[in-house]
Image (cartoon, rainbow over all chains, first blue to last red; front, top):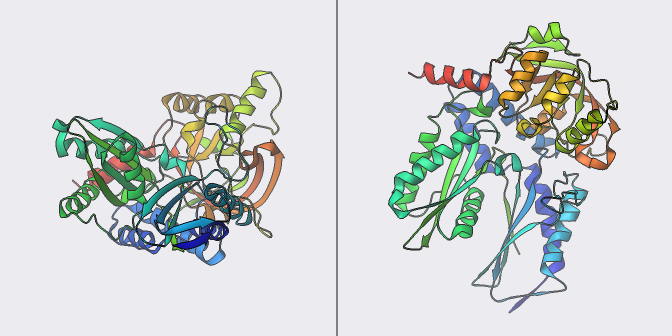
Length: 280
Length: 185
């Protein structure tokens, strides 16, 4: 049994909020640069150059990459031999978000009520996802999620007879409907299987997975490559101005599901796909 | 080569801009997004005056991050314009013909643009750090309680924008994509 004081979690979350919003992960930078090298649209090349210049400015001047510094999505993998002490875990995470968004001059984009609105003023509460895993470590991944892209996400409960083709069509249809709105080039997270809610969570986890990795199952790894190529034949292009680079990555995550169903969720993210992990 | 233009966006200037034109824009613009637009349209519905003169004005759909000490403004890229579609025709009817944002617009907005010689400019979504460098002054003029959504007056220099929809209703999202796909045939 290992004790971890929740104050340490607050400190880590504060730091991750600021770092995730300032420094684009190397896998995302690399994917954008690779796409720039392959781009053949004229306006598109200029847009990608500006996107690269933008993350370089954020790096060198320590400023947020994008003004939508997102809702703080916090993924915790808690070792089952960890004992959390010193206070409430949820409070500790929210205190980290509060400090990170205040001390880091990040935008406060959270309203207290979905219908009645009202900004909470400190970007809390965080969206917290906990998972109990073997071991005595605590892994924290922070992914600030902007809503220009979140709003273009979709979920569908397919009949099993829809098969693989149903999923392929749904991906294309969703990217097509999103068009220029989610700030393309985008990252596409696809969650297949589980239940209604688990499919959505899988899709969110898929956009947090580095873009230089594949699904460990070769069947889905091939599907990731195939669908990324198909999406990039749509011609939407960077910012929707026309071009090859509509998406810089497409990750698929799956779970077993029920004999009667085939849930599929698609979470859309922009080119500012942020995620930062630390292990305590 | 991008063309340099200076605001205000008069009707004459608006009519010289075409979908797909890359422009470097200088002059005064105003910031507003969801909550600010709602409030401005309620103000107009009551027959009251807006906090700024809308004639030939350009509105930037943006909610910036807070400025760090020494900064004019924080990161300041565009938000999705479609959420302002419910308000844009009203804003154009009182003279605010320029809009800066990103993403698709409804046919009602395009119709209002044709009627009032409106122009919809695109800024690069997600390039907030780069775009902030073009903002030279920032003054809060109303709705301070809305935080990031408050109404601000900005002076910009050479902000790199693209005309997405022009005053005749031509649309880069349709034409640019088609041109790219045609070039691949």
